[in-house]
Image (cartoon, rainbow, N blue to C red; front, side, top):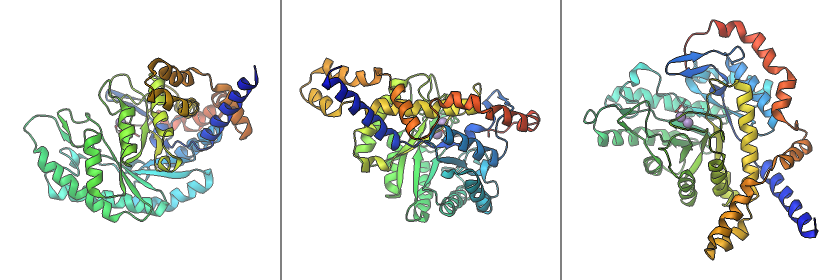
Length: 401
Ligand code: RM4
Ligand code: MN
Ligand code: MN
């Protein structure tokens, strides 16, 4: 390899190291708990049954990957006592060395939300939904966590059964009131989803609706892109580019899918799509990028919870490293001159490059295990938690998390 070759190798290593040093992705507490399909729940002996076990698992993932120092919490599942549970959570943060990340209100589980929460025709039910949102803001403030992340499951199943427009107005009112309660450093992230659990109309169905609502709420409201919440074939990186352009991208829920909101592990079906999304993110300045929160939103029914989560974070690191290898200056020239095949090859050659040796070198330099999945297997952690939690899980009854 000539001087040029060596120079390229050094440049690549630098790009990968810089990217990985700045890469953080939040794990979801619910990804460690038993989940299933709408037909049944599959119990795993090692699944987390308490919030303490979820923190313990999250800490393991962080120790193995060095990239997940925060864990997303779902209010009803993780803080059933509301704000009163905050000191216990703070105790767990200290004990396990991982912090609370985004706070996720739950406006989809209670029976009263059958016809909607913040878009329910009943003012009383909308009031209850707002109260829960305000509690969530308080919890976030008390935990020093930046984002309250909203997924609104509202919608209807049959044409003509609800006024779509009235429901827009109701949502604006409730979300506006929530925005007004946010502290200086807090944000609210508005997630969208075109279907499920409602099948005719979802009140916040796509990024346009989420963006408009966020804008009407105010500057602390941003859009959250869950990669599983689009129709087949949607160009997600284009949505990302637009949201970055208008300064309204708050963050991601990463997962992969083949057909619907499958919540499969990131990159398992289409790693090139994750690469393309990361490329858009890396194409903006570090400052513009700093407001974009990376979060995982997956539930693993068949794979082991711990293995799946470690695999996800490690895959995210590899795909981010690949995206960092795109020679963006050269690509810009080729795009400008419409040298299409060369531009495409410039872009794709980064994707084809095997970055695993570089990522491994980075792991060693940062005192992390060279191969996180292998280190997990060798640690005996999964066997240990399976022994400790096995009997509790065997008698577990159905609940989503
Ligand atoms: C939804 C959505 C939310 C998540 C719930 C459990 O489909 O992705 O973000 O909190 O699932
Ligand atoms: Mn989500
Ligand atoms: Mn989802």
